[in-house]
Length: 240
Image (tube, rainbow, N blue to C red; front, side, top):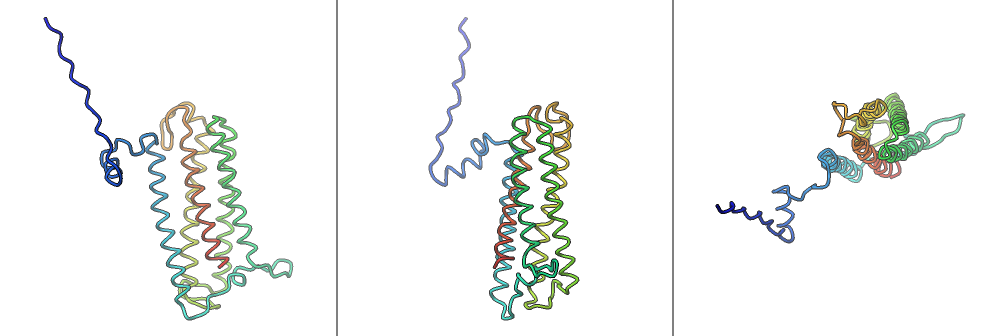
């Protein structure tokens, strides 16, 4: 009795060159994100879409500022504080920027210790990052309340172009919302790290495979993006 014939293995078609190859990859999902988890890939796609949103906001702000015939309020005067009788321009904004950039460093350290599977240091650094973020949001709330008390509204302000108020509240409010959500999720993931959910593979939201701290890295991607966006807001809105 003859042995059954083996079916020949399916041949892999060569990847087309150029844009056709890129379209083929995305259409067939054979190579796209092959070595990247879906959680990390989806975060990158979200950050890319969010980049377009922030970019549109900043472009709209720059268009409004350059097209208005009314003088734009001077940021050094609008965002100044009186401390001990001394007029200090942009002092609060400088502290806010320092706090947020510092939080990026603690988040990077948390990711590093996460891949070393050091639960306590990872959780502690994530909570410290969340504390920095909450401090930033608190100072932003103080900044908003100060400007509102001085008469700044989305439709006008005492110093110049009416578009200043709407641009300020839209851009800083949208960014502050991102920071607030980031603080909430940092606390959630830090609690899971502290409990050892990533060591035991305990089922639940934001819990990956056993021994994997990828959720910490995904939070790091989001947090670094929020910090980077603030650098552009600081440069275009406060320094320009």
